Length: 47
Image (cartoon, rainbow, N blue to C red; front, side):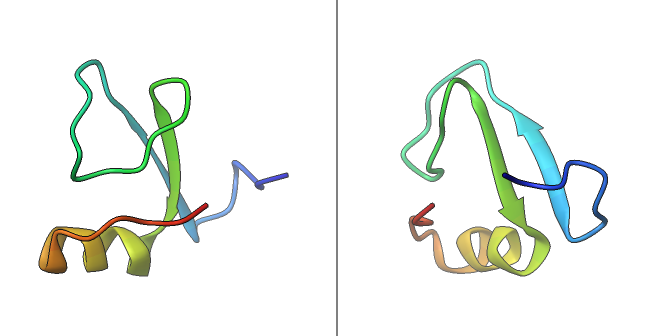
């Protein structure tokens, strides 16, 4: 299970589905480097 207090992770709450993100129950947990990657490359993240 993810460590929600870790600075290695960020929470992003999404109300509208976007295919720019892999999402689960409208909340996604991504490492910061992976978040930057999808922002830069517009790619999907595998959980």
